[in-house]
Image (cartoon, rainbow, N blue to C red; front, side):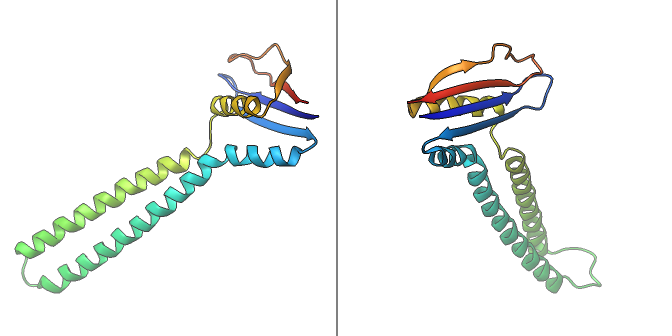
Length: 157
């Protein structure tokens, strides 16, 4: 017999948390499966963040090349820019804009690495029901406006 204990708190008055613990036979297997589900978003976001950081680095190399070309072509005594120098400056600005957009994407992904409590609750209910768990007891005072934690016990024969 395996028992799953779910403790969570979410809502208007608190930050929220969600813990799912398994007890009994094969508890370690279910813990590992739940860990994979719980941190799937983190792993995919970290992979995307690493890809975006590589793109940022590549765009930085392009900017360095363009600046070197611009410095080599522009003479210090000439205050104006010719057509090629204007095109190089335009390419530098475009690359800088691309880098800024990629940095915004990285920041957004970095902030959104974990599931919210309500998302975890839905995923856990689906995971438990797919694996044959049945809700045996649940605390009654759970609502969006409560500040107390909620506890559910799921069992599987």
